[in-house]
Image (tube, rainbow, N blue to C red; front, side, top):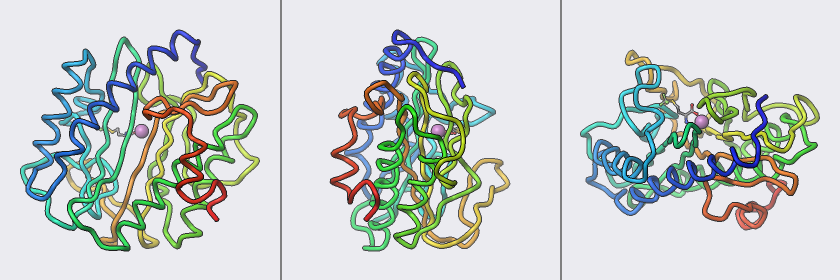
Length: 264
Ligand code: MF3
Ligand code: CO
């Protein structure tokens, strides 16, 4: 595990601001009729105009700045010319490099009015992320974070994706350790100040596997059930988790507002 210095963390925080602002640039445009290719162009321009570099484009051949994953697609969808429709959900994943450091963030959006059950999936996945972040404290173990996320999701009757995991992040987009969204409390490495994690629960409505299509990337649920994905880049610090990709970098209130840190 690579621990970052104070000055490295400040550069990562700048990368994270660019990444967040690029995601915020597309948010008001996510409505029925817009295409994910249009979203991709807006986000790419936002990153470039702030002096960043899209992290995904060209990564192992990935073709775009955004991953746009609609409805049953969990992650790694390609932006395309198909207009989003009322009732869809779309997961948007975005990564930026700035001055040699990476930031990573994802959020699932409602397109127009969505079903009550789809909205519950989004709410639970976002709450699982904030509860996981709340547990990402120096002295806790990685398994504490994983177990906290899994607990929130399963109490609500949803299912945690096993095929993809979160990760350390820094000079490399993917660094050790892997951050599964399932696991046992009290296990795994101890978290230390200076560690930066991309925590990213991926949640499905039903108990299902995730497959990868022939394009080598697009990863839908095998049973066609909906999936959601929320992600932040989080620095472990002496005084608690710092969410680099959030406007409000201190999370406690967020976890509580969204339903309590223990998921009750
Ligand atoms: N945010 C994702 C991750 O953590 C997406 C990266 S895949 C890419 O792995 F190829 F698009 F870069
Ligand atoms: Co990630």
